[in-house]
Structures are given as C-alpha cells and as structure tokens.
Image 1: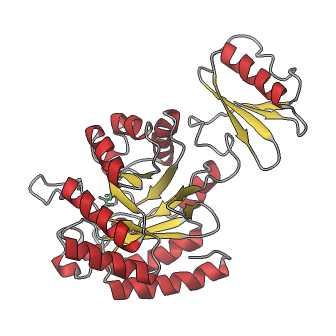
Image 2 (image 1 turned 60 degrees about the horizontal axis):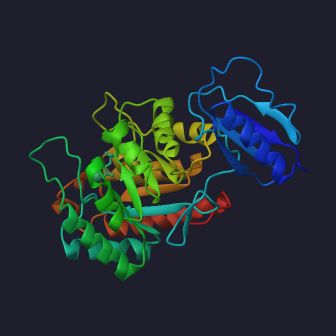
Image 3 (image 1 turned 180 degrees about the horizontal axis):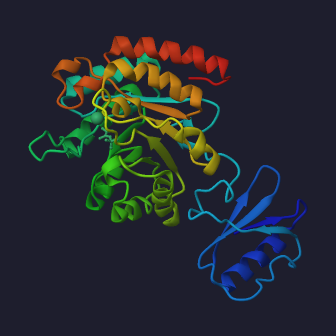
Length: 337
Ligand code: PEP
Ligand code: MN
C-alpha cells in the first residue's frame, strides 16, 4: 500500500506513519515526490482489522497496491527512476544508446569497436565476457580476461561498460569491473542471481526472458528491488516465436505497457530481438517512437568474423547511419541522443 501524506505534512508525522507500519509488520519506504511525500509499505497484507493509518495526523489517503509487484510499480513511485552511471542518465530526457560487440574477443576488436561506437554517438559500451550459449561447445566468453579488456576500453574512451553476469558466484568479480551488470534473458528467473545482484550498489540491466510475461518480468525486477538495489533497467529483447525470418519477436507493445506499469527505465535490444542486422535499424527506430529510454545494439567491425551473433551485428558504418536517423526521430519527440 501507499500512504499519501498531505502537502504540509511534517517530518514527525511521516515518522509516526513509518512507526505504525513497522508495528504492523510492514517494511516502509519514504519517497520524496516532486510535490509531496508518500510512504510505501510492502509486506504481508493479511493483517486483520483496521490499520488505523487514515486517522494519523498528516495522512491524506491510503491507496492499496493491487498488483503482484509493488516496489517496481507506478503506484509505489509515480516519478520515473533515473539511473545515473558515469555521468550518463538513463530514464531522463535523453535516449541512451548502448553499443558494442556481442562478445569481447580480442583487445584490438574491443578497442576498435569502442572507438567506432563512441564516435557514432553511443554513450555506453557493451560486450559479453561471460556468454550464456545454447550449446556448451560454443565460445563461452573470455571471463575475467574479457572484463579486463572492457575496463581498458572504458579507460581509453571514457564510456561506462555494461556486461553480463551469469551466475551468483561471479557477481562480486563482475561488479569489480562493470558499471552496469546485465542479467540475461535466460537468467531472468534465476532467483539466486536476482537476489545477489539486488545486494550490490551498481545498476542492473534486466532482460526479459524469452518466454516471459510482463508480470513475470516485473516480478523478477521486484526480486532485485526487494534486496535494496533500486537501480534497475528493464530490457525488452524479443520473445520466442514460431517464425524463422526473425530470431525472436521484438515485443514493442511492452514498451508503453511497462512504462505505464512501472517507473523503471525501459531499454530495447533490437539485435537479439530480430537476430538479423537488416531488421535492427527499423526496429530501433520503432522502439524509439514507442517511448524507450535507451537502445542496446550489437556492433562488430567485421560481422562475418564475429565469434558470436555476427548475423545480427551492425558494421560501424551502418551503426553510424542509424544513430543519425535516430537523432532525427528523437528531435521530433523532443528528446536528445
Ligand atoms: C547478449 O546481450 O549478448 C545476450 C546474450 O542477450 P540475451 O540474454 O537477450 O539473449
Ligand atoms: Mn549477442
């Protein structure tokens, strides 16, 4: 539930509300909105009898949150969450482009790509060091060596880095290098991993599971927030389909739906969402028009030689052209890239 305080409510009145909530067995959070303070409470809602919150001084009204997810919901926090990483704001008035190769392969490949995407206008560099592959025989990533190469690319270019963590034991290691930790689609319901990334103080990019509903996705984010980490971004990357022209179906209707249901920033990944470079540009443009806060796009200097996801990777030239188009669309939407 959310306890909405009166405009002129005092600090002591807010404290009294929190005290009462804690007595009732709830965990409470004070949220300073643009206009007024609200106190949100999560916990066992099967408390018998009246809670007596409405009659406390300074309380305007009590609104129950009927949805299964609480901390991630718009009812809990009406203002958008803005995640700040290395001076880049995600969820504000700019649309943030994250780009880089699917996997970190070599020092040269990483640095070449990093400079190319930066020059084109990307603000955040991506690259996988731990790769969740369908086949155990496919390249699994360079692990810590890959993290070091990413960190080097950050030192050189100044771009913050986002990289995937695939198991709870690696969270500490990945957090030593990464600015944003990615939880991949296949791990969206790895609850041990979600709890672990919920306990660190770095932003998390949570991808939607390949066959997950929006409620399941938001509940996965709820796991992270419930552990104390509120810096979460949601990433739509396509859901399983029965077609062969696209690798997945990029569910762009999820963008406005999730923006309506949740205050968390929404990122769209048209690379995994389509699986083919030819469809990446059109879907990136559509995602921007649908209201996303950021895009994650795979770029490789020589896609034909990529160790993973070459078919869906843009060349630096194609990526540069696309960012130009995105800038024009952003201008119409009164946003910046
Ligand atoms: C990736 O970003 O490289 C990746 C593996 O993504 P997903 O989890 O969406 O498949
Ligand atoms: Mn990939």
